[in-house]
Length: 343
Image 1: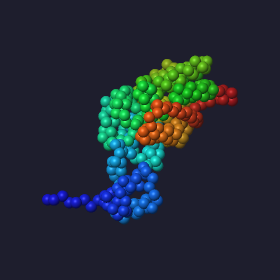
Image 2: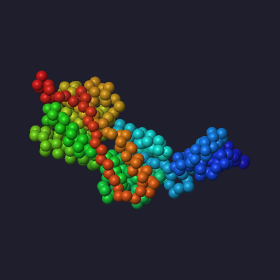
Image 3: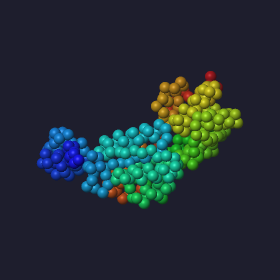
Image 4: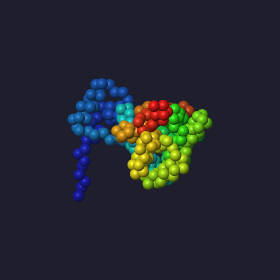
């Protein structure tokens, strides 16, 4: 049986109907090259007339790469990661680029495989939020010469990538100063992985704060991999250290803490104050509302896109780095011990 001919309209039909070249049709649809208003109108009328749906990759076939931007972030339930990828996608589409996202597992080998799979789509560029141990992926990307921007987790300058990140050292020193002013002297900092560069930066910030503020003690404790392990780690730390405030690093760790406190009968902030270095959507509707770190997500995504588009267009300047400040939003989950003692 002979194959049926597809009735799907093509770019050639649009070009013939509009009386222009296929390149002009592509330029109108992609926005990559300015087209006169008269030709643009003819093309759009032809598109509507035949019901043409452009193929994202086909629009960019005349070039060696596509206008498709890959986004790779770790497979983790962090509010920051989901908000960041959503914001980047919105900004990219507003600038006439499409995005394709993958989630990388914790394994460095699987992260590299995900990146290699993405590159089969002839990416024009890549935004990468690296895994904890990304050296193999970074080496591959450097050798591939694919325009790449690193976000959130800084990597060594030797790889030569543009980077946009948060000043995590300052985040921790500023937070601990604020807690110190509230009268807190025994702070429990709970994190997932000491090898995570962001965790290492925050630990450096804690060290600076301890040196700066007399009597401040910060106990740094791995949280474990689930709510039960978190609870067990918290119980051990509480018995040995007796913290007045606990800092968690992620939105899902904040959930673990809240569940653990309920099981243990720990009242926030009366028995122990709480802060998380993420911003879950439910933070302000808790009772009491949760103190959070507010990352400048729009600015981070916009700067990353600016760097990436410049590289995709051939910019050869030395790699750039932007380090942004973040804001602590202090709410009722943190008790002001100094005020309570004075009253």
